[in-house]
Length: 177
Image 1 (tube, helix red, strand yellow):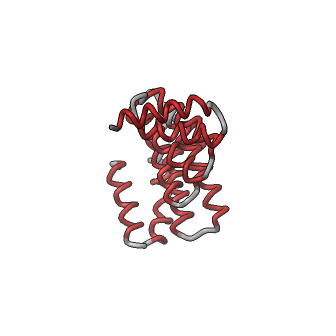
Image 2 (cartoon, one colour):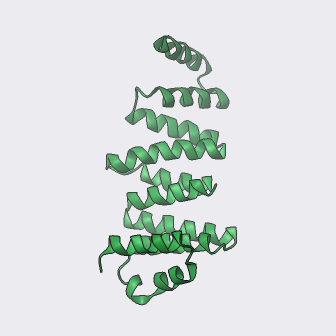
């Protein structure tokens, strides 16, 4: 009945490669009754991956998990889904999960969401998304040189604020010396 123990057990089954038992446990009615819809969707997404379902099925399960986490307002779950998607090279879904997490009012969710969103946009080559993500990141961390540099990079790639970007680059270089 204690949820963290159940989650640890599910993780252990994964680590041991006992996917049949994992699937039975996830689908068991008594377990289903204890898990939130977002957590159920997360484990179903995980099950699709570990049982090597086609990529389309895994992506569908990820989308379902993101939607369920958004409905629940579970920022921590969105971060977990974002990391999961990012590590499986599903950068568009990672972006979606992280983008929602950045809207959290809780700093411990919002900041990792911002960082994840920037990484996911870089990974996918989404320059417009990277531009917006770095603008958002600089709103909460204006002194962060890494985000300043990425913002300048995205500005130059998109052809925006080129003159300002060059001046900001010089200012950053001077600050490093």
